Amino acid sequence: MTHEPEHPAGESEPTQQFTQPINTGGYPGPTGPPPSSNPWLFGDQGATTPLEQPAQPAPAEQPGRRNERRRGRAGVVGGLAALALVVGGGAGYGGAALWNDTHDDSTTSSVFSGSGSSGTTTATKAPTGSVQAVAQSVLPSVVKIEVAGPQESGSGSGIILTSDGTILTNNHVVEVAGDSGKIRVDFNDGSSASATIVGTDPLTDTAVIKAEGVSNLKPATIGDSSALAVGQSVIAIGSPFGLDSTVTSGIVSALDRPVNVGVDASNNATVYPAIQTDAAINPGNSGGALVDMDGKVVGINASIRSTGSVGGEAGSIGLGFAIPINEVKAVVDQMAKGETPTHAKLGISVQDVGASQQSQQQPDQGDPLDPFGQQDPQQQPDNVSPFSSNGAEVREVGDGSAAEQAGIKAGDVITKVGDHLIVGSDSLVATVRSYRPGDKVSVTYTRDGKEHSVDVTLDSDAGSAKS
Image 1 (cartoon, rainbow, N blue to C red):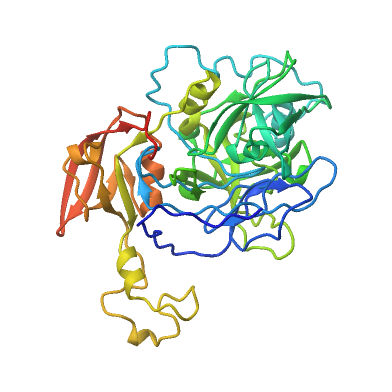
Image 2: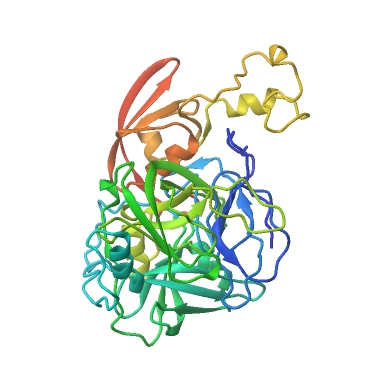
């Protein structure tokens, strides 16, 4: 089914420089309306979002197309909490999200502890350090996930976290099940098991499920996504188009790429600082593993960029996106323990610099990719630039928020958080969400042409209806 983008009441959508459709990495079931033109697609769904969308999953026995819901872009920023924008792309059923667990204050054991300690490889020995060797080691730790909901079905991928069946995947992969659907996990050895949802987090596009009645599984070894470098070799493993145990390889093409895959039920955006890779990621890869050459999970395959497709599922063009594992460790641990995930927030709503001015002055007619319609460029409206400026403009500041306490006001343009340059509203949301509640960060902004810098202790969205 398709879903029109939703925006908060009274808020305008941030201006986007690129409006081509994007394909998500999931693969849909045999039913559903025709795909939308959105360039970003989620896991197993066939719809798309304007920039990046998760890959879509496919049904186990009857590959077909299923439309993915189009996700709108919110104009709110708040870390992962109030007023935040999030971008996500995904493979499998939907997109994924990024979160930093550096300051996870949980006192109980982590679901990631002991990862990779069980299981052995029985395949023919491969050359050390080769793609073949990594594949043999990691394949037993990646599963295919099939989901059947009341009105649709699809398939995606997942990463085994514990030997007794705790599995990490994308929220957009399992949300198709709803409250009454069924989930089945297919393992690398050919066996399968029913599964139930343990927890979901739409803001990071992550979810944890539990396979029933299983033991002695091989947990994936969790790596360090903060140590990645552009040009480094990586391998993607998952079930594109329902084809389980598929391995592709490539490099890290870019880091901290803001990906926005839409909004949740509360109009909070799903945005994350993605790992961009040219390793082939397709619908159905969502929720699968992106690993380094040591076989350690550094990302969760979540979305792909596509030129769009008419009447069929879009495929990889060498622009895939994964959620950095470090960014979601804390959230995943919370879900695995049955807790409600929390996220950092500034407590502000933002938009791209100049977005409101352009929306007011540019004509409605003409090519939507031309900011001035069919006008002669020399006749363009005054004070409107066809080029976007770096930074995120503050639209509103929440009462009592971390931003207000730090002296940030509406109209300020935030250009830097910590060491991260802010290039737009999505960039700010993704960056704030890479921290944890209670973290102290330096925020640089301009006001009336002058640059200022303040230290901000980030809020938590715990108990908040909006981020």
